[in-house]
Every structure is written in C-alpha cells, then in structure tokens.
Image (cartoon, rainbow, N blue to C red):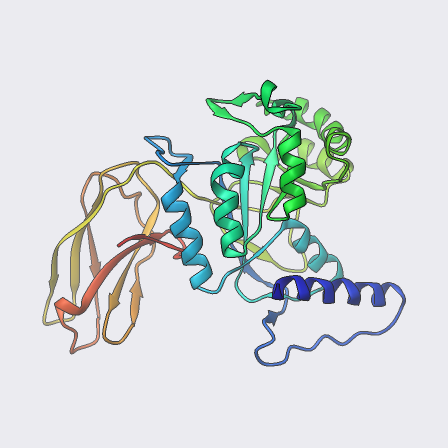
Length: 339
C-alpha cells in the first residue's frame, strides 16, 4: 500500500512538472525514499514447481517461498521495470532497498505457484511472454520445453489482479537476432489485441542484446529491456534501460551440509561445506549469534557435491565456536540457502 501511495505521489509530481511548475523533492527521515541512483537487484526466474528435480531453471515452491520471505524480512520492496523508466525520465526517487522480480517464458507456474506467494507478501513481479506459445484458452494450451504456458485468458485475469505484470519475450524465442528483430513490433500489437492493454517492457531471448536487436526494440516502442549478466543494475543518469542486467536464480534439488568447523586462537575459523545437488553460485557468511555480527566471504566457485573449505581470518577475539554459524547465501547475499 505504501509503495502504491508513493507511486501516486510520483505520478502527481510528473503532472506538475509537465505543467511547468518548479518542484523540490525532499526526503524527510523515515520517508522510505532515496535518490534514484543505486544498485538494484533484478532477479531472473523461469519455472517454479513442487519438485524441481535436476533442472537448474526450476526453483522449488518451498524454496521460492523462503526466498520471498527473506527478501521481505530484509526490507526489500518490489518495483516493476516501468518504475525504472519513470524514475529515469522524471528523476523520481525510489523506495529503499528496491528489487525487481522477473519470470521468463510465460509459464503457467507463474500463476499456480508464484502468484499466490507474491500476493501474500505484497510483492509484484513481471512475466515475459513468448507470444507464439500463448494459446487463447486452456483447451489449446501449449508448452515451452516441457512446461505448460499461460493462455491469453489467464494473462488478462492475472493482469487484472495486479500482482503480475507482463512483458514480451519475443514471438518465437528463435536463436536468430535478425528474426527476433522482425518480431518485436508485432509482439506488442498482438499483446494489445489479445489483452486490450499495452506493454512496453521486453526481455531478450537467451539474454543477449546485439545492436541490431536492441535498435529494433527501441524502434518498436518499448521503454525497458532485460539481458542476463548475473550482476546488479546500476540505476544512474546514463543507465541503459535497454540492457538491464539480471541476477540468475538457479534451481534444482539441493542438499547443503556444513561440517568440520574449527576456530583457532589466532582468530581463524574454517568449515567444510558442500551441496549434494545442482551446483549453485553462492557466498558464505559467518554469523556470531550473541552479537549478531556477520562476516561475509566473496563468492567463489559454484558449490556442488565436491567439498569446499571456507576460511575466515582476522576475527575479533572472544568468539566461541559454539556461537558461530556458517550460512550459505545467494551470491549477492539477497537471501539464504542454508540453514
């Protein structure tokens, strides 16, 4: 609700600016706003399912719920790509700790698994549709890879509920930039014909944006476009809103384990960690329970079944091994995987 109020305030200020009235934006303590220049995590999901098996692009429903709970507990607030475009154009300020949640491919699991969890948390996300795989009704439902896709009927219903917004992920998902460049304009028109609403947000298939395709997206009337680079988006005056990088959220089944912990008199703590499942890019963090202090490690090699030795040095004196807990976190520390 607070984010919606802020957005309405922003839109009102934009109308005043268009009318030529001078504006002075102030940030009172605790107002929940900060200047629109910072690193913003944009998370890339694909499929959510009760049993992800060994599919790196399928996050389990239970894990997705846990990730959203961690983000909410940490104070993150969701934006949509259109909010970045507004902030860029009108120099609006954004909420503290913004995050953007994206889903590629337009899969049915966004409706059945992700939407209820997001709605409960008060979060929003955007789903990018491969328009050639969106059928008119459930009886004609299509699949992308082995996953059921949404229908236009479901897209309209979800859009009306307000938790999920929609963008375009091409018409064919073909690995040919020239073909994709020819599709981008018609995709927007097809979306408008099928839903009665407009979208101006694009996501490049396979995560890359060669100049030919980027130019077609700009000419096609879009205002934002997503790539994949596993890094944060730096929201700054000259940011490229047509090459917004995203952090991949990897799935699959995991079995994390931490053992052989030791703390030396010299303040060196070490532990053996492993993940009996799909290897993930992670970072380690050491937490002292009594004080709440945390010492993160930089991301290293992907954590899989092969044990890794994590070492913390120069720890302060007076720590006790029993009070120290090794945490396994997402590579940017956005949410935890273990314990």
